[in-house]
Image (cartoon, rainbow, N blue to C red; front, side, top):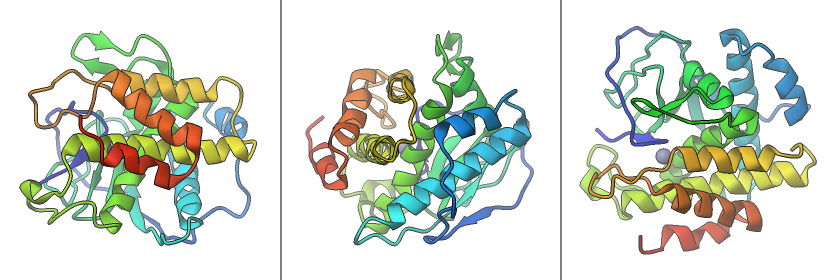
Amino acid sequence: MRVRRLAAVVAAAVVSFSGLGALPAQAAPAEQPTASAATRAIAGSSPENMYEFLETWMLDIGGYWSSVPGLAPFAYYSFPAAGESVESGCGVPTTDDSAFYCPLDDTVFVSQSLAARIWDGTFEIYPGQFAAGPAGDTGVLYVLGHEYAHNLQGELGLYGDPTISADDPYPLINTELHADCWSGVYLRAKLDAGQLEEGDPDEAVWAAARVGDYAYDNPTHHGTPDQRVAAFLVGYDNGQPIACDEVLFAQY
Ligand SMILES: [Zn+2]
């Protein structure tokens, strides 16, 4: 089964279960939170606050994309707590390192532990290789925006049969970088709405660079740090979803 991950890093997991939240297209919060308010809410980075942060912004991302003509996105989300593992429809249980979208249950999975470690810079990219700096709240938003973009890609038919990886019409690196680009489009909308603070865009760029990889021969290669940053910036600088076509169609 295919799982769309943020990075090509995965680990084994234990199993348990928790419920899924639903993310309907019209789920945009009536009162849009600001990034600074979200920063205050996360003070202490407790799991309870991280869940609230992830849920608030997942709904905001869904609300943004619902406002884009031609899209009626819908997805579920699940944010397992640290040490908790949730079964996904893709046969891959979550771990504390999980950030992926599963097309078979139409669900974005992001571990609260991973989000907290991306936020504070203790995220271990590969065993022994740490992120070497905090990506902050907007780094986590970049991750959420990337995973949600995979849901949009699925709804737009950019994937083939979700049970057959070889059926995909685009190389994996193209859809991964396209998801980075659409994460940039969303964050540009937040900038234009006055919801980003100084330094927030750099946090997203930082996070995009940290999850790049050089595993060229690995079929799960998502793009180098430079490629991921460049793809993110195509979307962020332009602000229009259509601008990301150049990433989707590029030769990597
Ligand atoms: Zn991905």
